[in-house]
Image 1 (cartoon, one colour):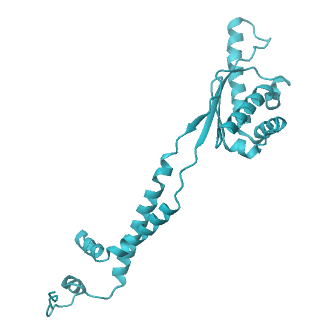
Image 2 (tube, rainbow, N blue to C red):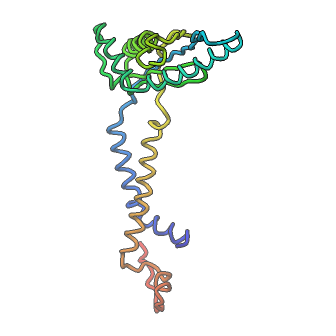
Image 3 (cartoon, helix red, strand yellow):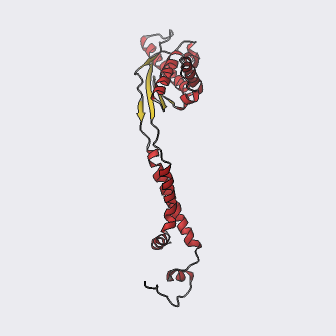
Length: 227
């Protein structure tokens, strides 16, 4: 199909093409609600595990110290991402009179590691709750990590908190801003498809080119009545 023919079809059936987009736009405007504000807090820890007694000299002690710290950080990262950690944080908060289910904690929790540094991030919809949860996270990861590291023989790993958590508001993502325009564009594309379908099933002959494509001769042309 040539572009000129396509343009003729759309100009003839433009109402069919834009109705789906209008309906989607009207529904989107009627049901639009501003995206809820989300909040995030983060904290970093450095692990400085003491060297073992088997090291022969100072350089070897420092080497094994750093190597052990990296292994500990890897283990702590996996522990923080799991459900057991969220349950421990929820239990500690419950002891303080703060009711936060483990699922809400684990859903907003993220952890990453680089060398001997552990980074924990926590997101939620209420700034006070986020701060309370982060305080619980800090307490559990520093005071109860022996349960996740049986290699240390029941001793807690030595974690040094590098910064205090600060709750910051998170701006809505670009996805929420483009949601309605994308839906309108898809509805417009669907409308164009409906217009082409309506043209395909319509048996009416509207110009001589359609007859020529059908292989029929044009005997006469009746001009439009002038108003």
